[in-house]
Image 1: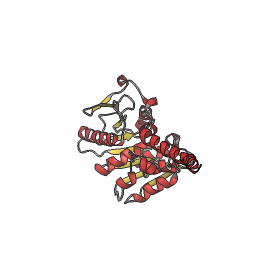
Image 2 (image 1 turned 180 degrees about the horizontal axis):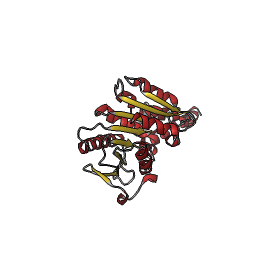
Image 3 (image 1 turned 135 degrees about the vertical axis):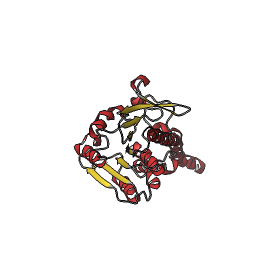
Image 4 (image 1 turned 90 degrees about the vertical axis):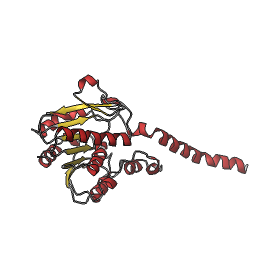
Length: 256
């Protein structure tokens, strides 16, 4: 009878362990959402060859100076950002390239691949615009990518929209009953990468953001060596922030 009771008592623990194992095995399917972003390569006008795959995207006014690179959010169709950025940043070239597995880009997304691709894109843009300053914008997931680029390359201006300290920390906040912080392989630890960063940084945050909790953005801001310019958009949430006038004004003024 005692053995039977012990067996029944162990079932919740076994179920918990099974869920943890499933989360670990399926984590990249739970992190990345490229499905709705897929487009035909013929719709793009920029290609970055990465040896194993080709990354496709768009170059807006590529002959113009002072280039800007945009790294989009998870599940974002970045081609929809072209018109807005061109309007906000007249006279500048703008590069938007889909992550692996997103848009028309080949391959499968992972943190290591996305970060390596981002550095390759920066180097390609710098080569196309020798001697010119390169600014970087990263939104949500893209803030983690942009933070890595800024930690490894000379970025003139860094714009972080709805950013987080690390993806692992955000995930732990959303799933507190599981040891997500220890299960996540793709951590996007922006706070560590930007610790002590002295460059020019703009942080735009949404007042009603339920995806990236305020504390996670606060920890990122605290990690910077030089206090960033922080713009709060009080009535916006994580998905509507880019449609707000305050968002547009902040980017236009910071990257003037």
